[in-house]
Amino acid sequence: MKKTALASAAASLLIASSSLYAEYPDQALVQQARQQAKAFAMDLKDTLMKGMKADGPEVAIRLCNEEAPEIAANHSKAGWDIGRTSLKIRNPDNAPDEWETKMLLDFAERQQAGEDLSTMEASLQDGDTFRYMKAIPVGGPCVICHGETLAEPVKEELARLYPDDKATGFALGDLRGAFTLTYTAE
Ligand code: HEC
Image (tube, rainbow, N blue to C red; front, side, top):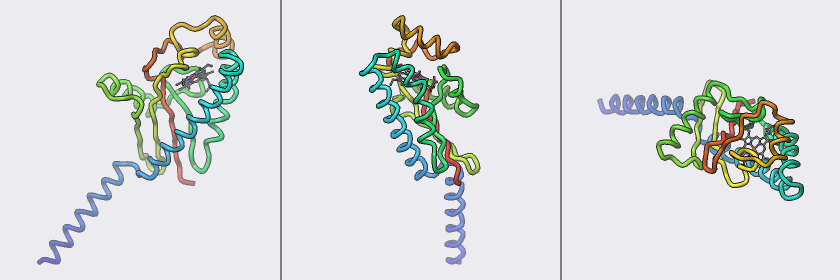
């Protein structure tokens, strides 16, 4: 009797933990994704700041144009694919897919409800694929190239490189977009 009760308790525990596992992505992967997003963000920021300090925003735009996709590619290794996306994109290659669009809309809603953008994230386990997103708020230097009023040379350079640019009109603290990471076990 006792044995059966124990066995059934153990079985229900097992069922509970396996369904938990299916619902919630592996926390070790979430941790890795956070670190990867942070390292990618730091590399991007370094490049941007170097460009801005040395030559001003027009040259920084060109640097971003050439190096941002390359920095993303350099960080995409060992099963990880890393990039940025947004509901209002500058580079058409950064367009969000269905899940990303849904999560970006969710981030905006959560911000409206009072949640802090700077810690906002989402993750998903979809078969063999793990996905992670982290919100990107608009900070001080960002409005130089993504703000409501842009300097004339910045406007011209952006129009030349991104004739379809949707990534302006942002204010400090707005949701600019998100880091987006996918991991597929190799
Ligand atoms: C010197 C101008 C400049 C500044 C300043 C700047 N950006 Fe950008 N941003 C760009 C360019 C150019 C791209 C397109 C790069 C690419 O191809 O990924 C871009 C792309 C992005 C993207 C990818 C999505 C998209 O629209 O293609 C995000 C997210 C982004 N910027 C966020 C920021 C944030 C946050 C800041 C402030 C920390 C910032 N940017 C500051 C020029 C700038």
